[in-house]
Amino acid sequence: MEIARLAGDCYEVGHLHGAQMATDLDMALEILSSFSSEVTIVTYCLVGYRSSCLAELLEGRGFALVYNLEGSIFEWVGEGRPVCRNEVEVETVHPYDEHWVQLLEPDYWQF
Image (cartoon, rainbow, N blue to C red; front, side, top):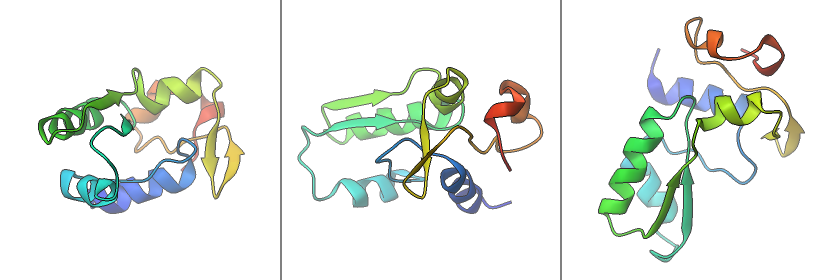
């Protein structure tokens, strides 16, 4: 399965309020092109690896206030914090696949 398509599926099921999806550095830079290098950026993904890599790349491009969401969205939703789907608050995220679903309680995931 193509990463960008799957990332889109994950984003559509549940994301942080106000988040914009970027699957790579070029996409993130395009989104950020109209912002100052002093804008606060929070990166996250399902478990944290890809988002921490992106945060590092953005820092290397001169963005000063880049943070990676510790524990990423799995921990966020697992703590009962809200996510959005179509601007509506929901409590579930896409677990990516059968392996990653083991990191979430059943009440917090939806394919």
